[in-house]
Amino acid sequence: MYITKAELIELALNNLCVLGTGQPVEVEDAAKMDKILRGTISILSARKVVHLRSEYDTNQIPEELLLPLARILASDAAPAYGIGGQDAMAAKQLAMDAENDIRSIFDTGRGVQPTPADYF
Image (cartoon, rainbow, N blue to C red; front, side, top):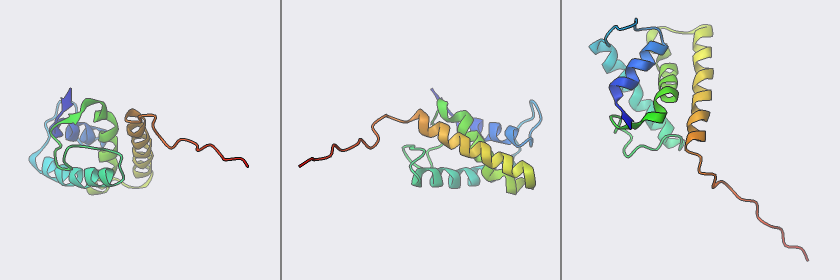
């Protein structure tokens, strides 16, 4: 299953406490978050954390990425919504944990294998 960019943005805004329960996403917030999301996806792609078909193909995001990617997006968007100090630091910690979650979701177990030593 896949999630859409709109679903991801809504959850990230909820994580930031910008939206109230059942409140729709404002057009301005959606546009602001879309710009931030593009940057977030580009950075995560460059660091080989998230692999989407295209860095801007954000309307078919694997469902298992919803929660961790929303945490990362919320952290990246915090300054744009005037969130700083302890709240921003807490969001950053959640984002780092979320990145580790994403890495573990897609870990194939085919990491670097030890090379046997040659003895003379």
